[in-house]
Amino acid sequence: MKKRLFCVLICMLMIVSVVIPVTATPVSKTISYPISMGTILYVGGSGPNNYTRIQDAVNNASSGDTVFVYDDSSPYKENITISKSINLQGENKYTTIIDGSHGTDHSIHISADNVTIKNFTIENTGTGVYIGGVGGTASHNSVTDTIILNSGAGIVMYYGNPSESDFLPYGYNTISDNYIKNTTYYAIAVNQGQNNLITRNTVTETHGSDEYQYGWGIHISGAFNNISFNNISNNERFGIIIGYTYKTIIYRNNIENNGLYGLAIECGSFDQIIQNNFIGNRKNVVYDQEIKISLLTHWGNYPILPCIWKENYWNKPRLLPYIIPGFIGYTGLFAWSFYNKFDTIPLNFIRFDLRPAQEPYDISGVY
Image (cartoon, rainbow, N blue to C red; front, side, top):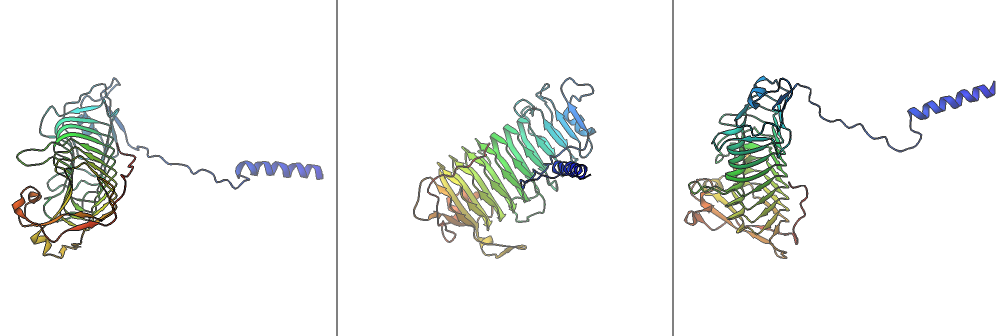
């Protein structure tokens, strides 16, 4: 009887040891991956019932669906409007091509929330991806792993006039891991949006326009936007230009070999410029404030405060603080004072990076 009871106890222990680990080693947590709960609609390729045009598939999709585009039928010569929350994904970002055929329209116009664009090459177009528009509120969208070439502008988020401090409550978009080259006006722009994340993009060779003097890599107006871990180089005028901003974060970017300024700020408040590499720009930085703004203390509910400059690398090791040149302008025209020396008075807004970095930062993860 005792022997039989002992056998039963041993069996019970074996069962328990299978269910419960007998050591203190933690068990790995189950990782959840996002799974599309909607329908997948296919464009191109040789499958039955596949769509020929991307726009036709988008029109027949419902919110939550995915439109998957094969590269077999590239290039797709069409402009696409998305007014519902869907995923638009290419098979391969190098070979799934949307060709604007040298037009001036938007290759992809997003007017809805929660849209994802991924894995395309967009070329020969007016604007690669345009989010929002006049009176538009499209927010919480994502553009990632996309190449944009030979366009007027790369990725634009537009919610209002960039030279007014409205700080409209739209944005929350993520622009990441894109490669944007050879644009005319700017590669990435946020006009009066907020809480947009622009990260791990390469922005290069924006050439500008003689009429409007563009050639800007990244242009931002609005509040609480974040520009981090980007490679911004060889743009004709500005690497980054921000204006009418509040609490913009510019962190750990390579800002190199830009033709006029690496970074220009006009009418900024409490923007933070931290641990960036400024290398080989014609001039590294300028800070400009309009007289009418400098006389105010608040933009609506937002205070006007000095910008923060901290631990940036300025071309070479420096033991002394780095001077940030500042001006007061009286034109009222956005960014014009950067071109017209008679339009500024060189006084007041001089700032300092008190502890410049002694060597360039190794910014990994850039495209």
